[in-house]
Every structure is written in C-alpha cells, then in structure tokens.
Length: 179
Length: 179
DNA sequence: AGCGCCATGTAAGTGGTTACATGATTGT
DNA sequence: ACAATCATGTAACCACTTACATGGCGCT
Image (tube, rainbow over all chains, first blue to last red; front, top):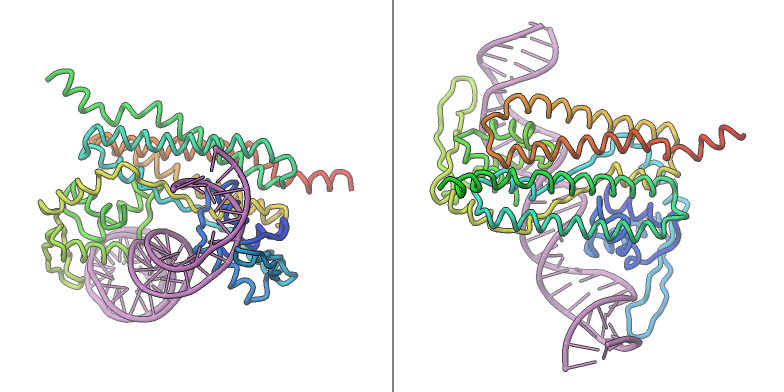
C-alpha cells in the first residue's frame, strides 16, 4: 500500500486537493503513515493519468489553480482490489531504538537528550490525539480503531520510556556514586 | 541513521561477516530495523572503502571466501560522531493501519483475515522476545532497554487489537442481527 | 516588516528492495 | 531426495525525500 493507494482511499470520503490530503497526512494519519508534497502531487497526477480520479481545476487569483480530485468508479474498483490484500505490512524503522542499542558508547547527556526528544514527540502525538478525539464522531469504525491504536501504543511507549530510562544511565550513575 | 551506521555499531561488539550481521538484523533488531543482504553487503563494502572497517578474507572451500569485518579506529570515531545526533527519528509506515482506515469498504472476512495475520506476526515477535530473553545476560544496558521496549509495545498492540477488533465488524454484525 | 497560510509542482538524489547468480555441506 | 544453512555479491528498479521555484493574502 503506497501513497497513491492511501490518497485514493482518502478521496472516498469526498473530493479534495493535494493540499487537503497533506493536512490529513499530518493529522489523523500522522502516527503511522507519512507523506510529503513530493509524494502526494505526483501520486495524484499519476492517479488522474490512470483514470482512477477525476480532476476539477478551480481558477484562483494570485494562487495556482486549485485542483480538486474526485475518485472515479474505476478508482473505487481499483481501491477495493488493493484492499483485498490480507497481508499488509507494518514497518518500523527506528533510529531512536537503533541509537539506544549503543547507549553505552554515548555521552550520558546525549542519551538524556535523545530520550527527552522522543518524549517531546510523544507529547505532540498525544496533543494531536486529544484534538482528533473531539471531532471523530462521524468517522468510520476503522478510523476510530486506528486512532485508538495510536493512542494506546503511544501511551505504552511513554510509560515504558519513563519507567525504564534509568537503565540507560545506570552504569554512569554507579560510577559516579562509587568513584 | 542508515544501515551502514547500524552495521558499524554492531561491529563494536566484535568482528562479524555480512551473514552474521544479517542474523542480528533478524533477531535482536528485527522489531525496529530491517535490512536485507542487498543493503548489508554494499554497506560493508562502502565502510571498507572509507576505511571505517578492516576486512579479513578467510578462504573456504566450496563457499565464497568468508569476509570478516572489524571496526577500525576511524570507524569508532565516525560512529561516536553519528551517535551525537540527539534527534533520531522513529518512523512507522503501517499498511495494516492504513488498510483498516478503510475497513468499511472491505469484506468482513478480509478484515478478519488482516487482523489474524497481524496477530500472527505479533505472536512471532513474542516468541522471538522469549528466545532473546534467555541470552541477554551480558548485553549492554541499551540493548536490554530496547528489547524491553519491543516486548512492552508488542504486548500493548496485541492487547489493543484483541480488545477492540470487534469495533471493525460491528456494522455488519448489527446488520446481520437485525436483517 | 515579517510570518504563516494557501497552493502547486519539478528535478535530482538517496537509500533500500527484489530478483538474479552460484554452490558446497549438513541434517531429515 | 530435499530443505536448510552457510556465504557472497550485483543490477535494475522503485518509492520516497529534499531542495528548489513561485507568489498573493491576511494577520500582528
């Protein structure tokens, strides 16, 4: 499932521009699927070329024409087929965890900084989830499930990090205490 | 932090071949950083070219020469610098969650299959964690922290999915009950 | 005066994936 | 017999990232 397919899926909720979709990638999708303009605009262009979306150009003064995309019947069909893959993958690439594997080679202050930085990110996700909770009344069940998943896992991460961060600097703490 | 840097980090624990490193990517690193031979071998070749690792070729009969890599002083230096970046990123790209956002467009049986498949994957991680727990006695603190993180988060995922999967098929269940 | 929002896109680059190529040894 | 393990690599491909390019409007 690539950016194209996700865009197609988002368009089932109604017509939208590339700019609109970006906002959705930054809000409800932010915790599990990132995409920038550099992926979204080419994706929409390609979908339009394949006839999977229709594009309405709305002229605007002083700005580029606003291009509003609308999923077509062929697009709906295509999406349903993509949605039949029952083995989607859940990929994680964490530089955070990779770094901490080598915490013993780092300066303790840097380890602390890395942990703080991660907790900040987690805090920002939690703010986001709080905002989203207020407007999810009419969301489809799947979206609610996914938001709940993000919330639960983010909280689990926060709890684990807070409870176990002391393990990362224990060696130095021990040295500081005895030496 | 790319594959090259992680390989360099792994080599601080002792000399190893590309094949050895792959096994580590499949065990203790599997839950947060994937890499195949297609990334590892070129990474090691590039590290050797930069003088960050030394390579000893051990001739073997019937097999390609075993190339054992050993981190050099320059490599250690380079790694320490890479480890000073205090804003490592934690990337997730989940086709699983992306699909479930559109669960209402899927066939209920397919939704079930997707959930089962994910639970299977989670189960395999849990087996892996159990194996790893038996041999982590002499691991550095960071590795233990990271393993614990994986365990805790994987359990949180399992619990959330099991407790909330019913939300995904509720619409159909309701229809089935009344109609 | 300056920032953030709206609004589109391209071009070059990167980093990783997939498929291919080879082949002996050891266990079942 | 057959599969798994050991053991290396390359070449083509792909999807995405980053940096660039443009520019008016509204708020403070």
